[in-house]
Amino acid sequence: MEEAQTVRYQDCILGKVGAPKEWKQKALLQFMMMACSVPLTVTFNWFIHTPEVTWEQFASASYLYPLTFLLVACVRWLIANPLVDRIVKACITPRLDGMKKSLSISAINVFVMGTNVALLRMLILQGGLEGISWVGYLSTLPFSWAMSFVLSYFFINPFIKKLFVKQVVPRVETFDESWAVCHEKEAVRALSPLVVLADARARLTQRVACGSAAIRARARKLSSRVAGLVEAGFGKARAHKEAVFHDAAMRLPAAPPVLLGTGSRFALYSFATT
Image 1 (cartoon, rainbow, N blue to C red):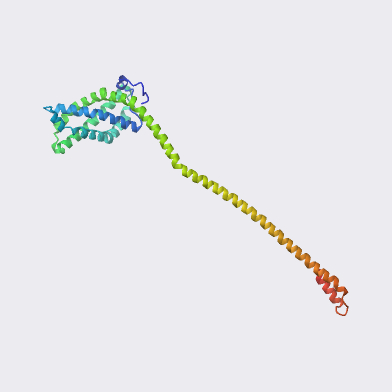
Image 2 (image 1 turned 120 degrees about the vertical axis):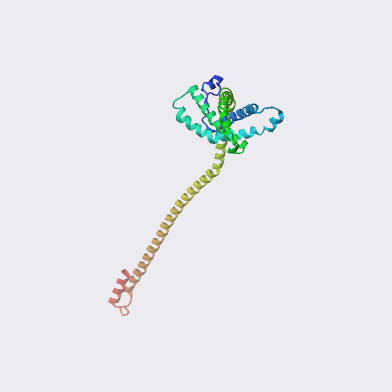
């Protein structure tokens, strides 16, 4: 229903103003139509079937208003909507458009709603199938269909659609936008702790990675220093050993020949230089 500000009575009669596509707006529109049609039809039927109209009898029959509204709502949302939608999609929409389509949909709705609501109301008021006068029920159906069709198509539907399009749709759209903004804020608030935790986890992972790299670099540096110190220590030890044995070998020739023979000097010198 996008023609929100230019709805006229003839537009509703000619079928230029369709039902809303969104299920929430459709349910709200049907609720408004039921709230308008139920009091009118209940009052009209009460005047027809009551021989003496008095305030006492009207007060005693006031329970019919909520009972009928409950029956109409149940039939509309549980029976009529699924059934009528299938019939319209299969038979009406591919073949008709404009006023013919609108008249056909209204006639199908009146037939389904009027038949089922009247039957359920008689079942409740008459105490079951045994108390129903089927002749009386079937004889009143054509008049109920005709009266409901004229009342709904030429009076209730145009009035409710104009009211709905001009007053309800802008408020519903504003409410939907506000609800979407509120829901988005709530989602952001709900996700903010997760975002903080994810950021903290990323920072911790980065620090651990940097720390691991630094630890590995320090370990490599320390191992290289230790290896250098060990190599230097072994080098000094070898140099000291060679110096000691060389000094000992150089002192051996000055020893008395009696104490050390030539073969012994040569053996000691050879051992020191190896």
